[in-house]
Image (cartoon, rainbow, N blue to C red; front, side):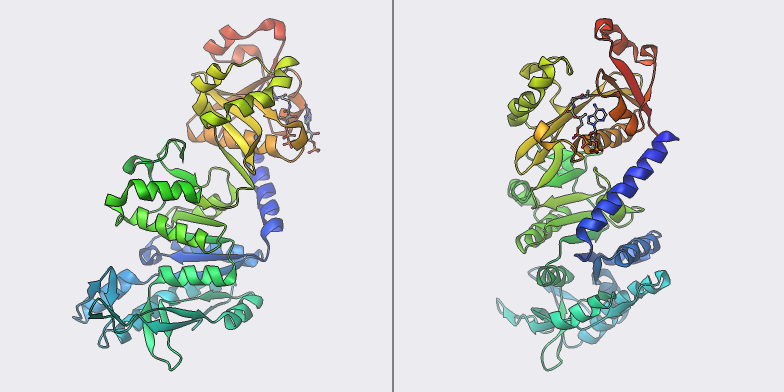
Length: 440
Ligand SMILES: CC(C)(COP(=O)(O)OP(=O)(O)OC[C@H]1O[C@@H](n2cnc3c(N)ncnc32)[C@H](O)[C@@H]1OP(=O)(O)O)[C@@H](O)C(=O)NCCC(=O)NCCS
């Protein structure tokens, strides 16, 4: 019960913190067409409405590919592709418009959550022309984002919805890839976030060659990547460049280049995926980030000297038990660090002692960076990690920090409740107190 209360309080804290920091910022959602038919579509809409009502500027760019395919098929119109782009013929463009607007209309259900939405012609397009001898006809690219109209709509607290159609200055319609619209809009509006909401979801590690230090959860989900890491993954897997996951990663990378601080690739069929990705440390998808300012991440080999530097004064005082570089190296995967602008400012570890219990240990914050919430965030990260790994309880052995752990919901518990292996190594002379937290 305590744990549940704690996680709720933490979630509320994070949400307020986030809202304070980013209120008035723009988030663009590029949403794959099949999601509109998923049972979770209505909760996805509710979550986006919630963000809009909370003061974020929400923009929706629905993809209509599959719906266009089915409409064209129904009317017996064959779609040809050239260089991965549909050739939108004069015969098919009106059907493409119809399908694109049908999909966009499905997002008008935002009004059910009392959020006004508007489908608009916010994109001026021009034709792609002839590519390698192939006339692309009504297939176009973004010529210009009509920023003034878009800003007016956003100022009134409405959510603009942009179907995959743009018009030339003389009113000629073009089918424009929703990826390109989302990129152009995110860049023109200075969006801080682009959500790529797809049915393929996050990037999975087992399927591709990954750099060694890539942060992966227990299900193989790649949690977060810097643009450099994303480049490395794309470069190491060129033979699979056409895989949807890598195409999404490439789109994310282009968005970061266009100035978007964070790109989140999530599975739109997962309940609450947007909110989980925004408000929990571990997230729910794959995040590409350019803002190095603060990151909680796993330990890299090159961090070990910095972690020892942090721990040394505390080891000298006997607050932390002594650890050698080799001992840290051996348990490297247990450690996480708070990295601020490329420097390690806090660290912590989660050790598995069996019997579904894990120990939070080696917690230290750089004295120049205390009381900034780093300790709390590291411990919460480890609590989430432990819960996801199926542990039933986390505990900590402390001689000076009991009050602090109590504020995080930990309760004192007898040494006898420790798992057998830990109990055997318990040093009675240190007189450490045991504090524990039950996981939901
Ligand atoms: C305990 C510790 C990790 C907190 O780190 P931090 O990054 O400053 O933590 P937070 O910013 O989340 O919390 C800071 C708050 O806790 C309070 N606090 C810090 N140490 C405390 C302690 N020993 N007892 C009670 N409260 C404490 C601070 O006064 C501050 O209060 P405020 O928010 O009202 O200003 C850090 O002080 C530390 O490195 N301590 C020594 C190592 C240690 O004891 N590790 C635990 C054993 S594994």
